Length: 291
Ligand SMILES: *Cc1c(COP(=O)(O)O)cnc(C)c1O
Image (cartoon, rainbow, N blue to C red; front, side, top):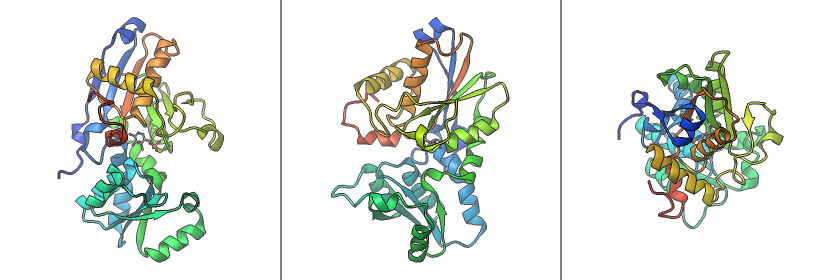
């Protein structure tokens, strides 16, 4: 298995009748090409956590996520490649059949510990972390999704890999918002970062940012409907670019819808971040996607 390679990132300019009609230039930054497992923004978000780990004498890495978490499988694989012991604290009781994602994580040697959703919701509390630290002493803890200052720092390097145009807009999906924050720190004053939020209720829990758009979560995290799947298939036919239904499919859908509704001025030059995550499509019914 090869190590992640940011040299594989391409900036793909796409053309569709809608973009031509609205006079919009649109490119996709293909972070999904970095690595088949440690894909997209997860590699950037892990980078400085791994540096911290290697700079000291920890016993292993411990992190958190759900059954279909891109972060869990990325961390498992990154640790496998660097021969680091790792533990995944998984939200919810252990199901009879493990998800494709968790089976992959086990394959890469991650030890899984399932905890109730109620306990999981307290994972950032001191008392919870004290219990975990007792059970796994000497482990370096990476927050859920690779969030935090290290994650942001890594994400602030994403745009260095883009070629081409002077972009007027950078568009990315927002989960924890770590990637959005990192990218926002690295843009110039005349560039706007648009964040498409993929969770329901995000606005209520976080500071409302004018640049976040909340209308495209399709009912909530990892929820979807036929119109999203149809759009992803159509987008693939037009561009040859596969998307995932949790993040980048909703992002591309949102951007095309905003363009359709004239919310982006003619002559805009948009760079959409393809943040990876294609492994999550394995949870869809076989045959729903044409790629
Ligand atoms: C994790 C993930 C995101 C969300 O990134 P945040 O930094 O948590 O906002 C976006 N896209 C993909 C494909 C992801 O796996």
